Image 1 (cartoon, one colour):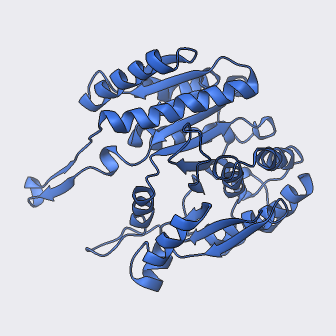
Image 2 (cartoon, one colour; image 1 turned 180 degrees about the vertical axis):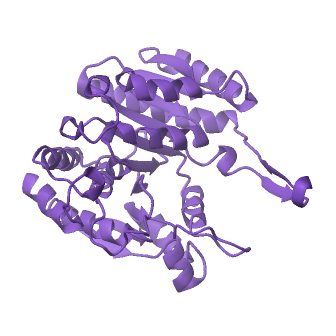
Length: 357
């Protein structure tokens, strides 16, 4: 069976890491890759960050691979911003759940600022609500100079909270079936201050008691969660949280791996419903325009995102495991790009992972 994949290389190093991931995927299975613009590349080609042709292709594809979006420059005026393309895509495809796994690679212990003893057994997934909260709420500015004011609105409904919570509980169940460990969900909020967080905690607690009694649920304030991620990350299994908190905490997990370039992500809408969930699969890192075209970008986050596509987008579990294990073996054999303290190139990464498959 040939799987139809919409490829959105994006900006900066996006096309480079995407090419590396596609080359590795071609060694694993049969895929029909079709490329479309998004972000700054789309603004240059079509005048908008998400052209209709790109959205139409994504809607009909089996899965979407996204490289990176952005120029690294502060946009001025009222023109379109590259990042708007990603936000619009998420909303159009109803991709309300963002999965961001983070695991400790023993071979990378020298790259992490944390002590290996604190990192041992760290293997967690952050489930971030992706289409609500501050990033999608009403915003505005008024006044000038000392009288300037600005506001951003954070709003969540019980329905929005429930659907992403069910993704987290379903994921905890599936991880427990693979590892034999007790399934655990840590719901992160700021319920002592924010009304949205108070509702979040109420809804998550109710779902856990009614439908997931076998899953251990604990609630944690976001500042405490940030501390524990740095001091005892192995205590976490699945972290469930809202949009902005998830954005910040998932970037903090780069300390577990030693580089943002090793962090993949999956944006989904159907996990836990019994359906295979097509979605958008992209690395956590940005477009890094300062190194674009130099051939030194680390593509492992993109390759690991392709593994998430195999697992959650296409239901190819064995192939996903094989690709993730190949990345681990490549690191164990000493593969390092400059961001990891070595001098390997993007092309070297393809060779290292292919050799380990």
